[in-house]
Image (tube, rainbow, N blue to C red):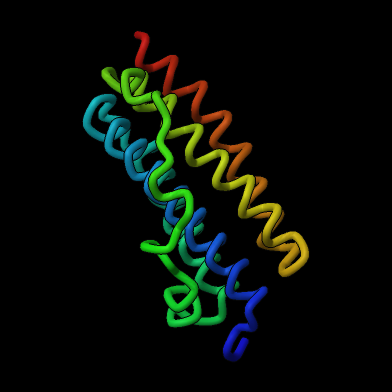
Length: 145
């Protein structure tokens, strides 16, 4: 992939934003699982998944410069939008719920965006999303014990 055209730039921008969203959500989950639950297996799996999302996004973009070149954090029309769910994050369970949704929704967007570009990546993002659904159930059950 050489220099991306305008439409490709916009798709890359959305992929970059959602890859970041997924990575950030998974990183919070990783820390809760690591430090609150002391669960080595889930910590390792979340870390692997987070790195896989970043690697696949980078691979689909063609280069780091393409991906970063598409980024426009200052010009993002959604930057100032916020939600009122910060009160839900006052417990480990609230952190898990909010960040699971963040990661799952970001994976769904990556799945859809990559469907026409790279079927294999789209399938991978779908598999990771469903794995997170299962992990959510497991993590929440461990937190309530």
